[in-house]
Length: 199
Image (cartoon, rainbow, N blue to C red):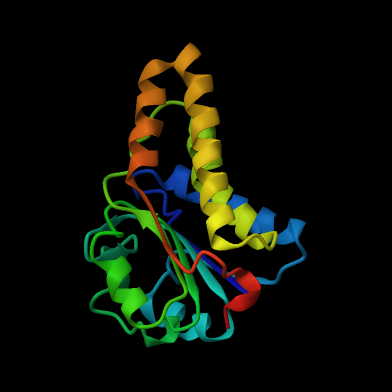
């Protein structure tokens, strides 16, 4: 099962981006006949995530973050250095959140997580969010298709490069923002593992 969590609260800055990522994650699951469970506000809580990941393989989360973790629409930790994270042992975390790769990544991997995808800096976007969603979600599509971590990482980098090249001709500023996001991308885990290796 894939756990999909995202902050689509209308009062949250970038809620439309997070909502698009969550919708895309559900569509990918549907495309590959995978079961999923979804949490959005007001059910986007640390307890719900910790309880649900036990029966899942990977948690896909799109919400605001900082170097210590990811938080919900009320500013409460969802996955952080302060929450219960032992349930991520043998699981993956695919996050679309600013800064979380700084401290949360080594923390979760140290507790036995198989995969961490996230960003070490601020995620930047403006204008049409479509290319930004395409880039951040491309690795998930690859992972859920059965590709291993190394292949999925390479797919993400390739999609980023394609979108950067396309936007460079029509919107150089957005192209630079995508380049910034690509350079902030962090993917950690055993290259040879795939979603079927998680437990």
